[in-house]
Length: 135
Image 1: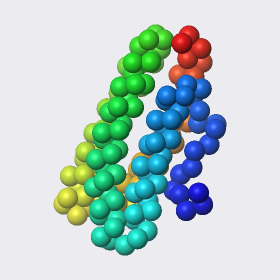
Image 2: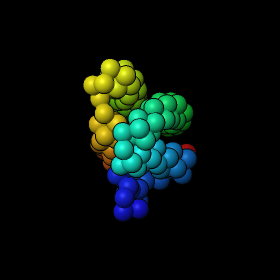
Image 3: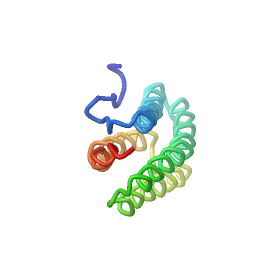
């Protein structure tokens, strides 16, 4: 939608339906946070806490799926890719602590999620695509 912060584009597809659908859900979480930010401080704060919880919980599920697939196909960049997942989770939890101190705004988290998701999907996850033909 036009008011979304980030929109799914088929160029992000890795060609594996489960992973693509999980990526779409991570984008939905980001957009929900962004829309909450546009409704004022109280709504933004509520959206922030919901988005952080979802971003962590769902990302863990997604990362586990991706990592299992990478191990199954013998993906040579597994350890580096897994490291990016760990950095993401660390950053989200850091942002939560900073938000609680009044140092991070919901908009900053929305921008981080957008940048991370797009960079990670468009660059890192796309590297897996050629190996997925093994499944």
